[in-house]
Image 1 (cartoon, one colour):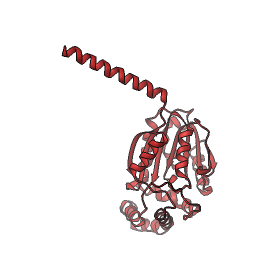
Image 2 (cartoon, one colour):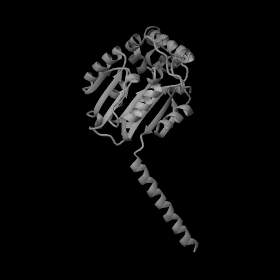
Image 3 (spheres, rainbow, N blue to C red):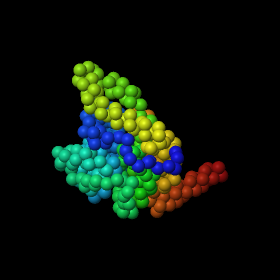
Image 4 (cartoon, rainbow, N blue to C red):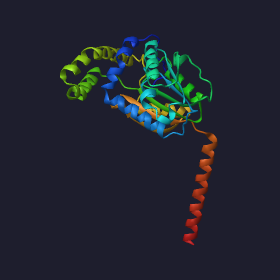
Length: 274
């Protein structure tokens, strides 16, 4: 992972991409797995309807709409994205789902979040295209309360448009039938394919961020996160990291309890030996 930041200007027409995004995602089992992983993540966390949860680069709003457990539907939700078309789709989607979400039209790279103000942050396949992705991650760490959590997914490897086309074809050919599948791939699919080609070119030119799984893990740890889970996802193109901002008092308490437990165990062993 290099220290260079993403260059200015976008090689991708994100507005056209937004109009076709949801349909292609519905046909993509790899995307559905990410939403399921997000739901499992939230279910396992100590969050409630007073928790502040921010989706950075939230796109059309699928993760809040489809991934929120019922107990968090009234949480204090915020959705940040730099693309107006994505936000328009998200606004409509949240209204249909009766979700109250604060929509923020802004570039996350230029935002300085209030320190210790958030309980949870989610960002899915968004940071790679931002101008200053590492700065955003550092800001996320600052913005989280001690004990706060991060659901992080980022596209780290170069997109292969032919590979994705064949994958979607194989997954939908029998479910939708040849005519419907080919029609989608020719129309909406061609827009997404063109965008993915632009993404791949920007990745090759190092205009967009690239990283391996170990590299992103090392960076997240360097920033100060405790990494609870780290693995490749999204058919190997992305990395998923589930992280916690350590609560120092809890960490000290847990370490002390662990030390006392080990001391007691050693004492018991000494008695047995005697």
